[in-house]
Image 1: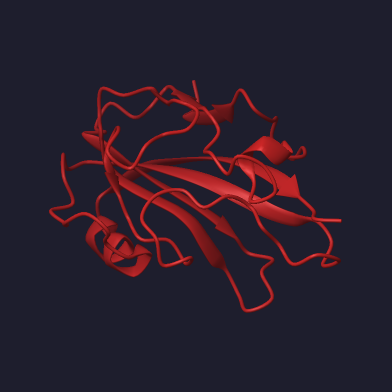
Image 2: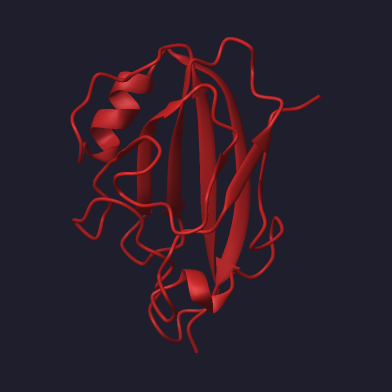
Length: 152
């Protein structure tokens, strides 16, 4: 069985409901994963928008998610499961989809990496670059779900 990531809020490739965006409550969607690799001791979640005008924009960095976890609840708090990293809004935690008006639909990738270490050894509010560097050589599996959002 393949390592998979899904959301109860949207299906892969479909529209992300306004509730989870800057035009709504700006809370994170529930995410659920199955068939994680046996070697996974923790997980790292990165949500980003590769269609942003200035290049890939990181909306959420969450690391040191326990290897025993199988889901993140809707409206995951900064002090909830795992450690919240710094997003490209210069804040810790989740920052929902918020593409420029009239820019068309953007794709938002939620990527969950299974890693073979229990902790990346980083403090709270680490950047995506710091997280990526610490994960290097430790990823034992990756699962993704993608949603779309357009501001009219």
